[in-house]
Image 1 (cartoon, rainbow, N blue to C red):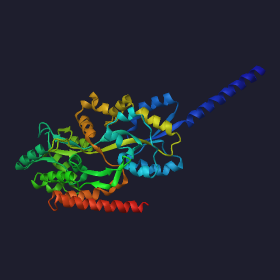
Image 2: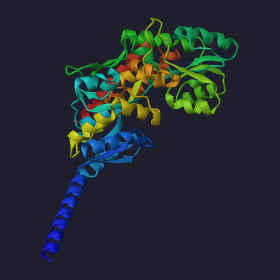
Image 3: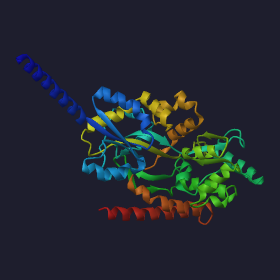
Length: 410
């Protein structure tokens, strides 16, 4: 009887110990928000991370552009994520509002990413995120109309003139919007914001009317003044007009992003993809770089483990698995030359152009740039105003809007 009692006591003690162990494991967990239909890309990495770190990772999918908005409510309530995914253009507002935790990565790990992609998650020299995927504008051309992409933007202008003589179009692009014309303005000497003494952006130094910017807009104006663009591509419906002409096979090439690949394929266009062409001075066109990145919530209960998770899933072997599953272009330098991407025309073009691109400034003041800049471009390119005068007016307007914005935030 005593023996049975002792045995029961031992078994009971072991059972309690096991319960405590399970409870301990259950409290060591990370909550991760991933983009819609993208968690499959990190599934294998999560399994390995859980084994190596004795931690449970809970994954929830939601649109990446809406995650910060949800974090504002769920974070303070204690039900938010440790790790989430955000677009780089939301970084500035998130940092100002205290939603994110700074990261501390070794130089070797930082250097593994293209400079533009990793810098997209810096604010005043402080790193807040690790790039997950990049997208940017590329040249998309109809292989049945032009055998291979032309090298320079001037070549495309000349080709487009010949096409118009046959009532067809060569290259089409929304140069009346800063998102598309930045590819010429940046490399030719214009800039959005200068730098402050911390290495971040100075929102009071706006360079959209500098000589290089004026020169760039004056060159782009030729596509309009020489009649190679239809008037219908101006304004809000311009992209629809461009897409229609390309899918109807009336235009040989367009400047657009990876989001257009599937619709063009569905329309039966035999298309190829290449990096953007060179500018008149031989420099390659730049573009705005959109970057999705993993960040850590300021309300995370285990910030060190959250950063460890981000570093773990961004090891090369897991990045390859993620690319195969999601087809999102990774930001690591080594992946640009990886045969898996190099031998894929579409992926390679995006990767090469992404390395030439400029991350869109993540500061809140960037929101004040779009309207005035687009208005100035439309006035300039259609000949209603000289480029210098239009850009001067835009810069003045942006200054006023930035000042008003900053005053309202004080």
